[in-house]
Length: 96
Image (cartoon, rainbow, N blue to C red; front, side, top):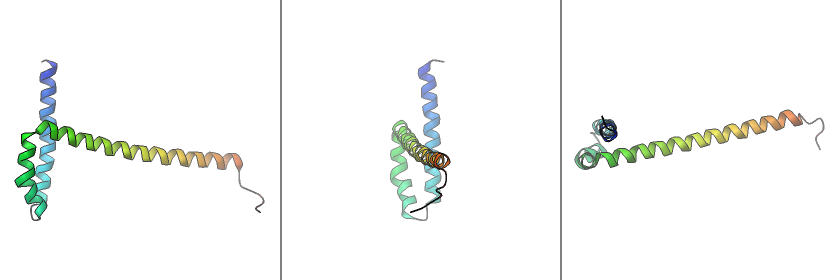
């Protein structure tokens, strides 16, 4: 199996997964306008451009994951620095 066939198969699987989540969202939101809009407008358009849609969804998910990771690392570094300063300096015996 060539690399091109493998990538094409992976792309088809990824697009099927993304579109299945969109179908599920459309079914869950059917009573409201958003569900009808997804079914009548968005899903047919997504079926036309499966690869582009899948790459966009994956890119957004990766962006959100990176943002959350940066926030967690930032909090961790700040708390460890604060703990280090408290350990080195100790508690103040006299306050002015």
